[in-house]
Structures are given as C-alpha cells and as structure tokens.
Length: 187
Image (cartoon, rainbow, N blue to C red):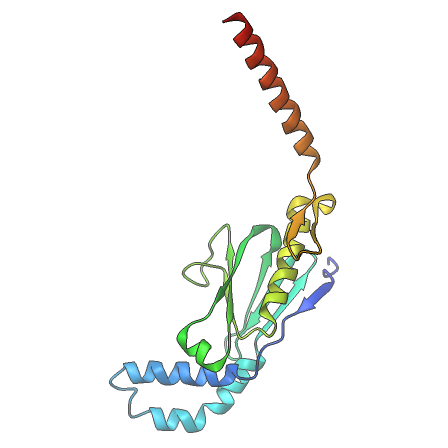
C-alpha cells in the first residue's frame, strides 16, 4: 500500500452553511405542489439532517491532489489531481450572498460528472480567497515544476519564474530572425 500524501491545508466551512442547506431544501419544497404542505415538518425535523450534512463536508489539499468529501447517508470522496485543475471559480448566488457566504467550483480539464461545469462544488469555505490561492500555488508548483513555482512579490502579484524551455524558445526566435534577415538581403 502506498503512503498517503501529506495534507498541506484543510478547508474550514462556515457554520451558517447549515442555514443555507435548510433554505435550499425549503426552496425546493416550495417549488413542488406536494412539497408545500411538508415545509413546516421539514423545518422542524431537518435541523439534524443538515447538521450532519455540514459535518460530512471536507476538503484537504495534499501535495498532489484535492480530496473532497461530502454526504452523511451517501458518502462521496473525490480525489482531484492538481495537474487536472483548470480553475477554482468563486461563486456567490443570491442565497449565499444573503447569508454572507461564497462557494468555490473546482473545474478540471476532464469536466467531470459532479456538476454541470466542474468537478466539485464547495459551499461556504472560510477564507475562500486564501484557500484558493494556496491550491493554485500548489497546482502551479506541480504543473510548472519546482523551479517555476509561483512567488508572491511585494506588489501582491503572483509571478512565475521562467522555465528552462524559455531559453530554447528564445534561441528559436533568434534563428528565425537571422533567417528573415538573410532572406531580406537576397531579395
């Protein structure tokens, strides 16, 4: 059995997420004719369900992947390789905004089946921007290699050190320029 990658960072989730889950379920019940009479019962009995739903959420950044866990009855764990992550989109719908929450959608090169446009959806991550930046930095370190890991400069802008292949591209450019000069001299 392979040793598990070390955990670099664990996402924390806002407790207001339980209210978000409750309101989301109430909105779904409101949209159905049969669900309207069930709304008061759901409001009373669903608190424990939504608490367990909240407790079942987890997201950990390892050296090579994001491990996303959710669910309390049907538990799902996804291991998303960082080299496949194309974007970490920040999402804030009207219900989330009313509760002061934001969410993150993990988009991958393969698309995935979890959501319509991404691999996973994480609502209510505390310090979302800092978590997002750390994940992107780790992804860049893997994709670009350790020698081209992003660095935060004084102005707060992430910059990546040039790769060794940049030197090769410069040589090719210079060769093309020499060829163009030779052709211009002949013509």
